[in-house]
Every structure is written in structure tokens, then in C-alpha cells.
Length: 238
Image 1: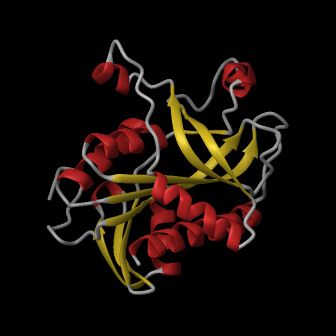
Image 2: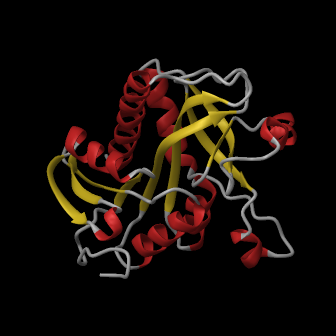
Image 3: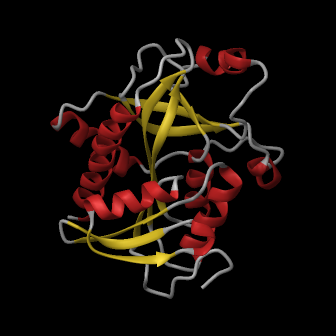
């Protein structure tokens, strides 16, 4: 038990899916996992453990943004024995080649957060995904004909930027595929504590064209993304 997680030792699986939204964590557990047990209700940041195709898997909400995410990831890695973390969420598109409903499999994550600067100054740290997990995710996406892109994303501390799309122009000029708010911290803490991490995000809106998918389309896209994440960790476990 920690100040943020009421679970006991052994309540979490070594593989954990990390959505931001607590209700999405609940939906993942109820829709995809067998023999589900709720292991955390503190602050309504819900956590569940079950299995998928016989492989023990947990899903834990992180809340929005990197400070909140860092708390849960730190505790999962250091107090609850997590070994493999998979961010599953949505992102805004920063590249016209990435279409609505496409999946982005992140290799690296840039950030505007000051969290890494406090630890790495005077250096810039480039947090990256685990290559083995990326490779498996790409193979499965190809097998299932899921439209996907592999490359760098951007984890921001700011959702509503006063400068709008101009905020991201330099990033777009350097091939950044999408923007979200959690991946950089997950990759960084996984590296710090010797764990493996992957981030899979579905593109729910395009920053460039200002288009977005409907609520029904978002649900369908999320189903495909979660299945890709689950199939990846099951293949990795075999």
C-alpha cells in the first residue's frame, strides 16, 4: 500500500496497461480481461488485475499529465513489481500522413516538461521504448492490417496552448507524429528502474486540420488499439 495505491503486494501483474482515464481502465478490464479484480480505488484512479489469453495483466489509470503519471509509474515499478508498462491512449496528430483513427507506435518521446531537466541537466535525455515490444507491436499491426506509424511523439505539459498550432511547428518540421501528455515520463522511469515500456496511441484529432473523430469512432478505434497492446504483450510473454 502507498499513499496513492491501496493494493497489496502481488495484486498487480508484472505487465500493466496504463490509460489516463480511470473509466477507460475499468472498460479495458471489463471488456478484455478474465477473472478481473479491482485492486485500487484511491482517488478514483482505478486499477484492475485479470488475465488475457491466460497471461496475467493489470490496467491502472494514471490521470492526465506527466506529474500524475510519474507518481503511479514510480510506485508500480518500485512497490508493486511491475516489469512491463504499456501506455494506451489517444493523441493529437502533428503529421498529415497520420490520419484519424491511425495508431502511432512511439519509438521516442520529446517533452517540454521540466521533470527530466531536474535529473539530467546539463544533458538532454532521449527516452525511448523497448525495441522488442515495438517490433512485436509492428508485426502484429501488420498482420491485422491496422494502419500504423512508428516514430517520435511529443509529451506536453500544456493542453491549451495560447499559440495554437504555432507551438508545434518546430516539432512538425522534425518529424514528430503526434502529441499527448504521458509517454515521456513512462519511458524515462522505465529506463531509470530497469523496466520495459511501450506506448501505443490512436489519433483522435488532427492539430493541423482541426478534424476529430466522433465518440462512436473513438470507441471503435480504442478497441483496436487495446487489442493491439494486449496481443503484443501476450506474444512477448510466449
